[in-house]
Length: 327
Image (cartoon, rainbow, N blue to C red; front, side, top):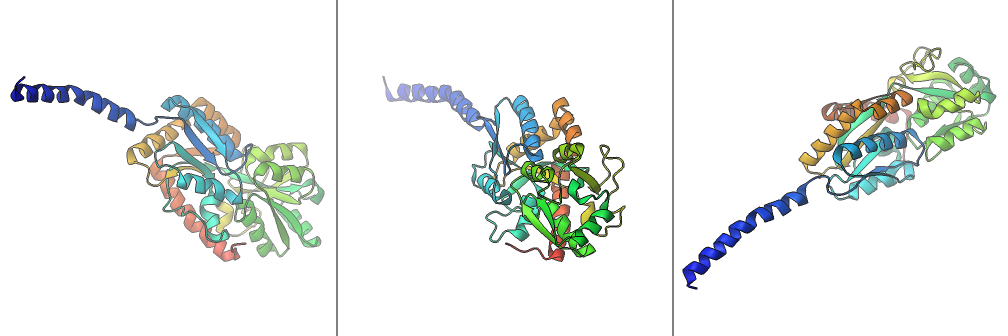
C-alpha cells in the first residue's frame, strides 16, 4: 500500500470515528447522569424535610433519576450547608434549607465556614403565609397580652427555638425587649423535639411552622396566642402580632425554604433545576403539601434571588438591633 493510500484510509477512519466521539462527549455532559441528593441541614420530620421530599419526588419523575434526601442536622444548619458548598458543582447535590442558616448564622456563628452570598446559587424558594406563636397550656395565656402578663410574673420564660438566630429565637428576644420580661431560649436541632417539649409542658412556649405546631394546638397542650405574618386560615380567630400591638418590622417577616446548588454549577444545569423546581408548583402532590404546610411558592429564579436579597437586608438589621452575637 503506498503512502498516499494509507493517508486516505487513516483520514477516513478518523471521520468515521468522530460521531462516536461526539456521542460519548454528549453522554458525559447530559444532566442528570446519576442520582441527585438533596441535603437538608435539619433532622427528618420537620417542615423543611417535608418540602425537600415532596419536591424531590417531582424532580425524580421530571428528570428521570432517583432523588435521595440526606438529613445532615446539627450546628444550626452549618453542617449541611458546608457539605453542599464542598460538593461537586455538577447539579447532583442540592441544598434545601431555611432562612436561619443562610441569614441569621452570619451574625450568630463565629467564623461561619460558608458564605451564603458567594458559595451558593439560589434556584427556587417557598415562603410561609404566617407562623403561630404558641403558649404552653400551663401559662393559661389565650392571647399576647395574657402571655406578657404571665412572663412578667415568673422569673423567666423558657422558650423553644431551632437554632441561634432562628425565627422563634429572634421573636422571643424581640418580645422580651419590647415588653420587659426575661427569657431563656432552649435550642433544639429541629421543630419536632421542640414541640414535644411544649406538649410536655417543659417549655412556656415556642413558635414555628403551622404544620409542625398543629398537633400541639389540637391537643390543647399549647394555644396559639398570635401569628407572625398574615392570619392563618387554619386559625381564623388568632390575631397577628401587629394587630395585638407589637411594633417592629420583624413581626411581618416570613420564613422561607430555599433550594440552592454550589455557585460554580454550570448555568445550563442551574436553569434546568430552577425550571423543574418552579414547575413542581403545578404538581398535585406538591400543591397538596403546600396547602398542608400553608406555604406559598415556589418562586421562580429571579423572584427567589430578589426575595433573598430583601430578606437578608431586613433580618440582618433586626439581628443587629437586638444585639445578637456569636455564642
